[in-house]
Every structure is written in structure tokens, then in C-alpha cells.
Length: 422
Image (cartoon, rainbow, N blue to C red):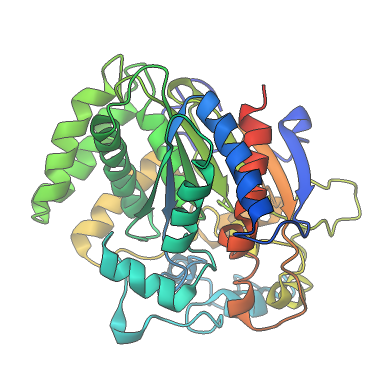
């Protein structure tokens, strides 16, 4: 996407990413927490520290109770109406497999639903219910910080940030503003400035929050930034969300300044993020997109997913082709906002960031089978999570592998290789 992207949607290019793309496989290695594992992590920590990385933020949401495939919007625009799927073999079966309540992903007990709070109680619930499946656990983050700093002269602070997991445009836009406020607070607390870097690792739709944040961080006075912040501010006032209104008031002047986050550079890594919003590279550092992928194509286009019906409904339950949430939660899908005020604000943001609407447009985007945005480095990884198990909780349709503890060293090594080797 161009500099000054101004919140345009990604172009969903099917072209070969060329030298932006690399591939890897998660192979058996040093056991987590073994001496060899700590030594390898410490070596990565040294390289990160030498590159100026002073903090790593693990940004994630929840798979449970969040309509992760965004089927609510598809149903609203006619996904179940006879005629929409006529002539497309297997589409009804695919929609059924995606639908919340029928896809095998259980809801949280006691009615816990978005917006989730970024607090210890919610973290504990996530860790108990999900473990390390699509969830950066407290143990994962603590181990990362301990191991990375084993030999480092300059400490790397590792922290965990849970976003509200509201899978719609309004929820992601509000989360992007809150994230920038949190990152600015981190810079202030750690006295970070020019020459320092923060690495944000985001799982799933949290990566879309980073895409919006990259547009907000554009150093030019783009027209979309005051418009988006104005929509959010009006919504916050209407709904009595004083905290969100205060954050917008505090963060807006910083976004227009020459040193937006005290001069700190933000590097970004996404794991299994659907291709939707465009990225603006002008106000951030390096970007890497990691996707769980196993090639099932016969046309040589190994960088694309396979979207063939009805076969896809047989592949998904065992995560045969990799991450199906990344492939299917594309433009046109979403959870629905809960109130009329939220729906109105969501529509206003929608008109800015995503021109694609309607059931047929979702199907068109899904069938493009694009794995990566048009900006940033790309890494296709076989995480070896296709074990033949049809228990969704073993793989969450290929979306759980990125945050497993057994992938921590692998992920860190690949991030260092792709972003900080030079």
C-alpha cells in the first residue's frame, strides 16, 4: 500500500510476493525451558537488544465467545437466504461450519463475552479456558522476558495486552487508539526515546488493530485521522465512555507531532491476521506477517491458500491447509455491534476503511485466498498442527498454533532472522 494510505483497504493482490516472502517449518528442537532452549532464546535476546528493542508487547484477544469467523454479518446480509448460495456447491456446509455455536468452539462459562477487560481476572479466565491455544499466556510472556534477558546488557520488557475482542470496525478502531495510548505510556514509564524500538506481536484480528494504528501514525496530516478520531470521540460522548474520550483527547496531539511516541520506532509482527485493512509504512518500523500454511494448490501458486468448495469443508476440521480463520474472516464478515449507537459508529468507520459489503463480496474476497497484505515481509510457516484430530480445541481451525509454548523459540528466531539480522 502507498505512503499516506489514509485507511484504504488492502488491494488483495494475488501476485507472487517475490523477495518479501520466505518459508519455514516448525521442527522439533530444544525442549522449552531446557538449558539449550534458554541459551538459544538468550542469543535472540542479545540480537534484539543490539537492534534497539527495549520492549515486546504481546497483543491478543479471545477465540471463545467472539464469533471468530464473523458469521453474524454474513447472516445479516443474506448468508442463509436461498439463492445466495445457489450454484456454489458446498457453501451452505461451509457457512454451517463457520457459524458461532455450530463450529465446535465453546463459549466461555458464566456468559463472559466481549468487550473483555484487560485485567488479571480475565487473563486468568483465558489461560484456564484456552491455555496457549491462540492465547499469549502469562507463562509464555514471563518465560520470554526471563529467557531473552539472560545475557542482555539492556533489559527487554515483555508485557501482555488483551484487547476487547470486539470483531467489528468500531471495536478494532477503538482498540487501535487504546493501543497507541498504552504504548505511549510504556515509553514514558521506561524512559524510551529516539533510537529505541518496541516490538508488537499480534495474534489474529489483533493484527488488524496494528494495521489501523499504522495509518494513525502516518507523519503526514492525512484526512482520515481526524475523521476517524472524530467518529470515535462522538461515539464515546454519546455512550458515556469517559475513558475512551479522554484517551482520544490525550493521543490526538501526539499523532500529529514529529515524535509521536517520544521518537520510539514501532516494529510489528502479525500472526494469522486476515487480509483486510491497508498498512501505512511511513510512520512505523519493520513489519512481518506470519501465516500457518500448508500448500494444497496444484497451480504452482504456493503463496495462496486453497479456497475450493465443497472440499474446504472436509479440510477445515483437521486444519489440513493451515489457518482457515485467517483465510475466511475477510471483508464482509464480522460480529455485530450490540447497540444502535455502536452500529451507527461502526457503519461510519466501515465506509472509511472497507468498501466491500454483501455476501457475494465476502465470497469473492475469500476465494482470492490471499495470505498476506501488500506491505511488509511475509513468512509462510507449517506449524505441524494438522494431526488428524477433529477436536476443534486441538487446533481451532489452524488458528491456535502461533501462541503455543513450543513455538516461542521458533517464532523469536524467525522474527530475529527476518527483521533484525542485517
